[in-house]
Length: 341
Image (cartoon, rainbow, N blue to C red; front, side, top):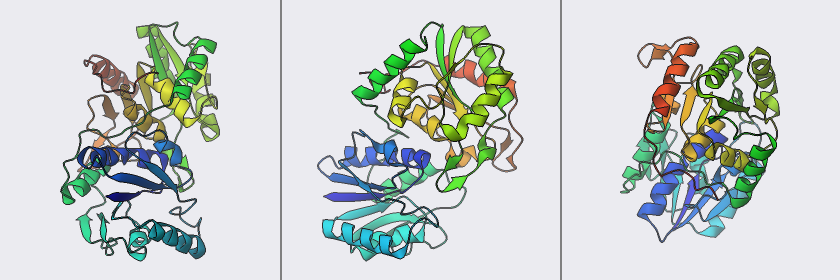
């Protein structure tokens, strides 16, 4: 069987969909799995063991960044491939119509507010449903048994080699614990939500506490849009930290996190990357709902105030985060992480 999975963006959202492709690979080991993804989010799937082919979508799926000609061209492209089934892990009616226009016979996907009308099997989804659980329901609707894995990322050997060079250059292994901290996030071609960022001075307080308590070597990571948060955090810190802003590709960042003992960051692609390589991960939720975007992974803790019934509260206090770190680091480790080449 040839199966097409459609999830155009963003990096974190696409990473959350890799648990679904792990299910496809386990349940349909002889199938050929193709993942259609936007160019920006494609690095989330690089070297994924459960995907046979990545089908670039360009800017397709990004609001106001593509036109009818690009859409029609992509429909023709997937129609020529003759896929047996399509799984649409996106709520957009435009994405739901792609396999319909391409005449793919079996079309399974999300149905939010009747926007999944082109699917032959519609999986009802509410705005408050957890994304990972929703993808597991898609699998169940197709008669597949979902795997427990929420996220999969496999850095390449070259990624691990680059991460080792960075560790040596920045002396990252001289402390008692290596902690990766990502105070940015919330920026991608489809949206800018910098309110997702926990206050930089609170990140600084946690980083200083890690150094004082665990003798940690803290490294700060991010890309150019994260620069203001990283700079503000560094100004507030009293302890040293290695600034790796802009020093890694996405895969190299995954390898760096895989070789670390702890990740702390906002609800972002970096946090999903930590989940994908099974590094203990503390995720801060300030503007997005953990009951929607969080995970049930035993290697992760979501920190937030408020509740599902009452909604999110204000930014979590520092002591909630330090308590989450203590609790997470006390959990026994497992062997399900990314192998370090």
